[in-house]
Length: 134
Image (cartoon, rainbow, N blue to C red; front, side, top):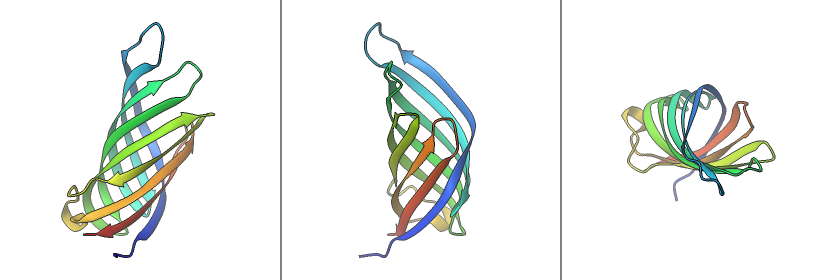
């Protein structure tokens, strides 16, 4: 078993562009959300992500997304993809993510990992990633 190393950090959102694509009279609204953000801490760099989200009238939501991060993990540079899934409840955004296998480039070739994020709605997220290399 390969040893996992944990890095922690924060996300700052720079662009948040929701576009509803299905708004039925009843049931959850479906929205595509384009986000551009930066990471600091154990992950340094910029991320771009597309989320698909279902939102209920009570303010809860469920979302999935794929994000490309360009930067570094623990000082090793390259790019990689994170696949996200999460929810919004009681004005808290939380979820889990994993590194898409085979997505690492540069010094991050072979990167694998899993982690997550948590934030108050509309604020920067606290993030973590337990990573290893194939």
